[in-house]
Length: 262
Image (cartoon, rainbow, N blue to C red; front, side, top):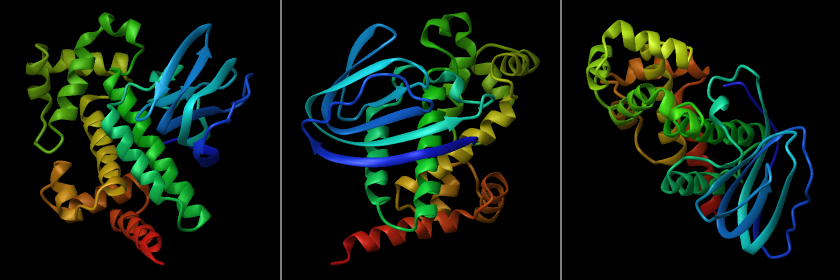
């Protein structure tokens, strides 16, 4: 994905971390592990706590303050204007299940080890996963706009729920009561991609998610992503990301061993 990290950092148990108000030239994602904050954006005040990920868009005035001592990860980044999934990002909490966010926190806790380049790559991987999940769970559009095309939203949820199975366009079309042509037209019109392209994207993102956030063997990850052949899965992953899945897995193993060392 077209994501460039500006910086990333981690804080624990901060009681007086009064975040400055104002605007920034980059986007910021705050992933809370403990504690709570309040924030104001677009004139609206809200709160966030452990298991929430809060998106602060670039060039948007915001104010944040600590309510309870916080531990969190923060990533500042730029997203390309034509980024396929960043369009669903809206100021405030991401629409990602809390359990998934806490799983991302566990991964980020492990990423304090390794080379700078390796950490940056894996931070980008976690960020990519959260952006895609937000895209899927929000239906690829703002909440207020979902009612205009709930069919696409339901189709994405169907794909997400059946990634380990053989997914055919006719099955998706039947689930949302459309013809194959009608489904393809809707996907192209709303998402700019065909259903087949979205299946590949979501499988590859889920594969990276499992590699980063689990200790499952690659054969099992391949099966969970709908690939009966680990060899074909590895080739597809390499073609999509430019690196072998085994390399990502070894990096994570290395981080874990480093952390456990005295």
